[in-house]
Length: 598
Image (cartoon, rainbow, N blue to C red; front, side):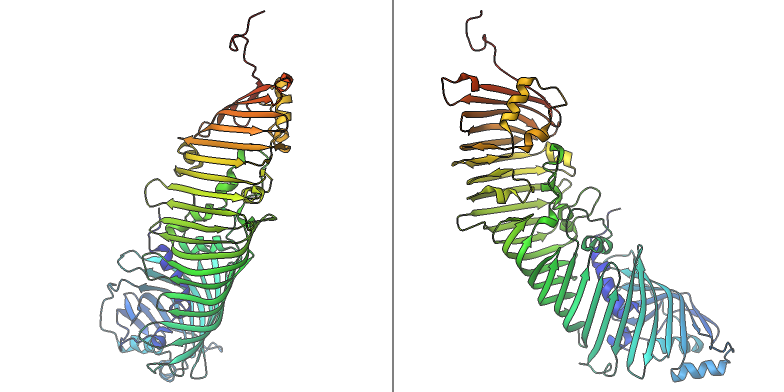
């Protein structure tokens, strides 16, 4: 079932709930409850145990409802049963050790929870009041279920199961230590707060939060600023995860796949106001790439929204690019796979659908597997399941000019993708290095691309590919294809299925000039005009590559530059399955050439 648009919001909000609500009853100290008292239905067999079996409102901002629970006194260490009078005394003087079990809470953002108001007996009020007033020695919470009801919704979602121990040190120091568990992930937490000035309308209460797990660690030491809106400040907060995709997937309920987006960390001043969390003038690390800047997360909309400016000293693209494939079958896969976590796939979630964003990214240098691309700058906007990425600058050196625009529209039933860009460089090898760690093309030249495709699977993307691409090496260069081996293999009589792309693609061919134009329509690439010049030959390519059917039919004509050396004239036909086509010499018959028959 597809998660609702509120799903990521409420699960991200779980972190704040964990810190200030889920651990129990910090709420009455941190939030103005307008004098709300516990109301609901309960049964008290005696002063030792109270069973709450109907909704009871603990406080109203935020609206936290205790739907059920058993509240009891922890037995003394000596095992001696307490008398009713001793229980009453401990509840009155704040020395009680309370236990909360079989509890279910609902944090209700809709404000419509049907918490019934009922008369509460003095026995029930007597054991609940120390909880809401924070008047106890210890409070042990055993596997409490915490639910969240988003605004405008009637369905509750599970935030997690909390087990924790809340203790008081002196009159003002409160500490909650425990775990939050959900979907196989356990987050241990340690929260402390000084409540000395909690009753002051403008109090600044010292707070520290630590979360430590294999999935995420977070440290916060600062102040809760009491006021009309929730506000936390810290001069040096931090959060880190070695598996950002997994963390995002855990928060959103989706599976995020693809290369990269693993290591992430943020460290620096933090301001948490209302539903906006901001790291300002902070240090960030993304897959080993270090950046300075500002990043904000706003949880107030229908979807979380990111806004920020990140400046990288060096941006290494290697974590996002699959290593160069050894077979033709996956030659183009790296170009698709590196952004899979962003776009998503039929079996995974998509950040474009899960988030809104307005990001500005710059880098002094951009590298990929050892290839240097100079500096670059880009803007990325995501809104309503649509992505617009503008790469305004691509710098390999002073003579390089490049730009690109990528549009992804996931708002409809069928995703649509558009790519338009160009690059002109003294050596295109560096630019092509982004897609593969092999040197596919080298030489001064220009490449342009303008393509559109749509679909949810790789097959559909291939079937709908439409557009054009051009490549020009006016002063020559080289391509990662062995033309001499191709001609020699064809002369020997190529056999179907044994062509050996690895051998042909393992060498290079030096070119004096290359001009190539390809057009695509419904997944079929047509060599519209492909002409090259080597030291001894003029070479032309025509034919088609059907990406949807995975077959090709190409003709390569090599003609000697010297009219008197016809021995260099060759024509090769390549046709059949892309992975194992038939390769053979394709000399036209004398009849076709209109020559006399012997």
